[in-house]
Length: 130
Image 1 (cartoon, rainbow, N blue to C red):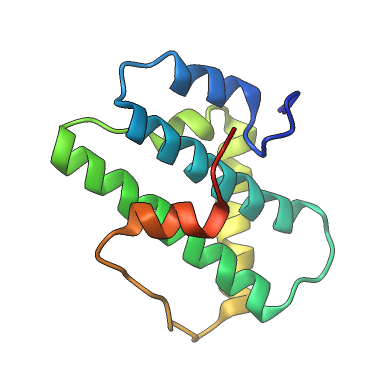
Image 2: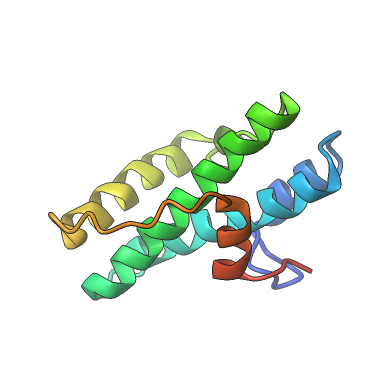
């Protein structure tokens, strides 16, 4: 999908999140999660060989995004849905293929970090979305 403002978030997902009833802090983290989702897909879809470190970092960012999403769902009773990002069959298939690709490269290395505040970790990892 398109990203006309070049902020690393697909425009249709950005519009959906910004027009939602989510709290502002949740919206910002949803957009940051989208940046992590998109980066993981891009690593797989370019067809270029990526390093173990790149794959591990992408997986770590996906972990931060998922833990952050769950944190807001628990605290606020509502959060974004990952399925809104992978909103058609091609994107869903690409997500599964990307996760498999990254997991194959990372292999048995399970040295991921699970911080208490995954939302802050996500923000630190992918940066603010303007």
